[in-house]
Length: 199
Image (cartoon, rainbow, N blue to C red):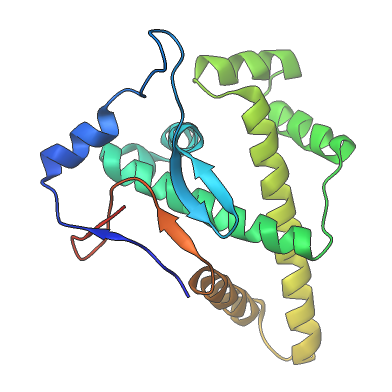
């Protein structure tokens, strides 16, 4: 069952100040990371959420138009679903080796008409850590492999009598069940559609 802790409603200004505040520091130079969300036995770090928000901002006009706190929530939710699919893929024996990962990243660089070193530099200029980008790409490939397997299984189970759209709808419903059956705890203030803040 999806579990979340609720905080009393904060004002929009207070929420913005929490999200916009710089990371805490152990001394005067080393920033401390913090957990943004717990996903079963895994966690989403705030630094990951900020990097994902940056990726979304640069790749989607719709995301770029969001307020900072809304964009951060979108990034955290995106990472939560990624974690859930990765966990399911790992439990199903799906793995992505380094050779496959390297080919995928080279393909992404090529699509951007950049060499791999130039692509790495471009990521750095956007504030995206290359090592984390590699792991995010690995998780996406695992999620894609899981999706293909689940769609294939559903097509076989239906005897190819259902349309691709219907099977895709079933898959999306399965993802929702996956999320609803998971333990998810937000560790940062996140506003829901009802105006409540999840923490």
